Length: 372
Image 1 (cartoon, rainbow, N blue to C red):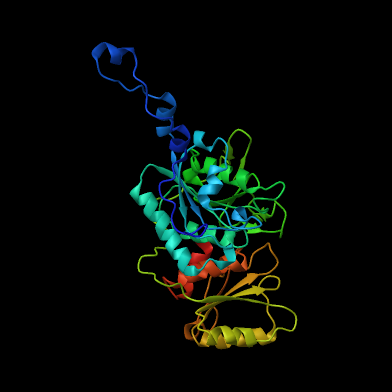
Image 2: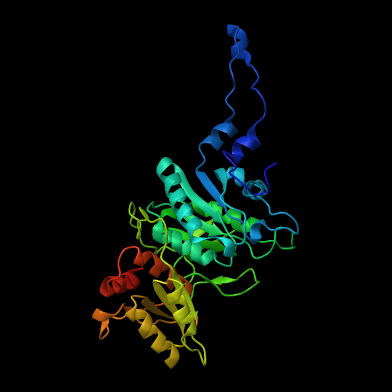
């Protein structure tokens, strides 16, 4: 017996399930000519014209109960009226907490979604159900690695499926509606939680337990789920299609990049440990606008002499650490050090990992962090 949540749920097309009603009866025209003629079911015909959405389920609180985790198929089948919105297929990619998702799974997820889009030009969009703890990271990684100009909506829940006021069903229903929205291609990869649509780059989790746990400091939402429809901002730019910001072709493993916090009294022990563990990059969750302690600065200089790229972000939650326009003095003999702009530490780590698959040149890295 397959464990709950394991494997692939193939071909779960909900409208067809809902509309299956047995063989059609013969009508008067059939009797006149001595052979049966099947009636066309208008409802079935209408369902066949609905856009298709692929739901990729990974687990998380949206699947949690007090016992077993719900499968992606069970989540979708619990949504009343969804069969009037889209034809849905469901893939059980994993069924774990979001903190258990690996970098290898990220690579497989991005390639799999790209393959779905390439194989089916009529696929309107993809919905990824995820735990919320690292949801923002998954969305940003997908936004940077997907080439197709169709929406990828990452959603989940802050309350378990069996809790009072569970938010998962509404979030999932809204995510499916966004995936078939006519302007969906303008949003790329986004997070939809608690009626709001957030850009993948800026969204972050700002509360441990409330349903309104997500925000996008400095940017705000790009849309919202109203009771009757999804409403997107009118000023969203057109997205370039056909080429991902970062091509994963030939990338079998992402370079190790560690995040290290600055705090009062911090020495360089964790920085040196990261270098010894094989880090090719270090992101500092710095105080203020990129500051660190004297002990950390000394260890960072050593790390750069060993070829480790350093990016300074901020632990404050808002504001910028300037990327920089010119190389620092001595950069020709050491690995670059640059600012993360307005990326938080976890997002800066993702961008640096992907950037290091392309270049280690300081100016090229700065351009990447200014652009993405």
